[in-house]
Every structure is written in C-alpha cells, then in structure tokens.
Amino acid sequence: MPVAVPTAHGMVYAQLANVGAENLLVISSGKRVALPVVRFHSSCAFGEAIGATDCDCGVQLEAAIAAIAREGGVVTYAWEEGRGIGIAGKMAALALQQAEGLDTAEAFGRLGHEPEPRDFDNHVAALRRMFDGAAVRLASANPAKEAALFRAGIEVRERIKLSVPLTEERAAYVAGKVLALGHHP
Image (cartoon, rainbow, N blue to C red; front, side, top):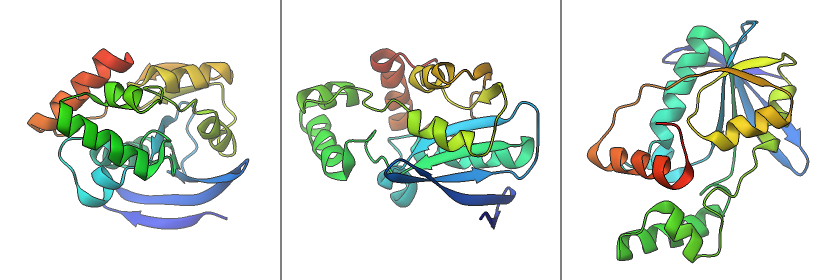
C-alpha cells in the first residue's frame, strides 16, 4: 500500500517491495508515463545521513527524487550500504582509502570484494512491481545497472545525467568511478 510523501520537489509515493529475503523501498511519482525516469539507489549513511562531501550518493538521490517528481518515474532504494558489503565493510574500505590513498575499487579489492559486487536484479524485481513497460530513461552512469535492465528485457532509451553539485572531493570520487568501474562520464 503506497503512502504519500510530500517533498521539496512535490508529492511522491513510497511502498515496500518484498524481493526474496529483503525489502526495497519503491518511490514513485504516481504519474503514468510511457518512458519513466528510473534510478536504482543503494543506501549511503555518509552521503545521505551525514552529508559527506566526498561521495555523490546523497545528492544523486535528491536529484533523482526531483527528476521523478517532475517527469514521472521510479526510484528503487535498497539497504545495500557500501555497494552491498555493509557498513563495517564500507568503513574498513574508507579507512584503507584514507590511510593509503587508494580509490574505492582498490580498497574493495584489498578487502576481497569485487569493485561492484551488486547485480541489481533485486532492483529490477522491485521496479517490475510498479512498471511493466519495455523501456526506461535511466538516471545513472553505472553500466552494471544498465546491464541488469538489459538482462530483464528492459531497454534503456536514454541515460540521464543528474545535475549534482561537485565539491573538489566529490569530483575526484566521480572521476574514480569512471576510471575504475567503467561508469559513463
């Protein structure tokens, strides 16, 4: 059962989607559009709760909510802190980054994790609870998210670059994702 959530960008609607053993929060505009804006988003305590200026998670989520409220679409939100390695793993990776000057992918590798351990199938399953169309506009630069949609038979008609403020630290983090993870610039 969706609940209405007033935001600075207008009304959105939230509901839980049970996907296997987990729940994802599905945030939608409530508008039926032929080509919705879609974002798969994973939790980030530092960027969302604390407002860290060296990651883009919090500002990407804010921009995605604005985009779906304005244009119609869906954000799926999973509690997958640290790309799914958990808060303790994320903090260990951050400690390595700070102590040794590693980027996120290098730190993940040193801890025995893939640079992008998520497959996003859980997000696709949650999206399918709201949307049965054949094409979307993807609000992400992550090619793994596009690949998950492709595997599910959903075409990405357009990749939307969300407009977010770039601090000096955030710009370096985003550049690192382009180099290490193959994100689109």
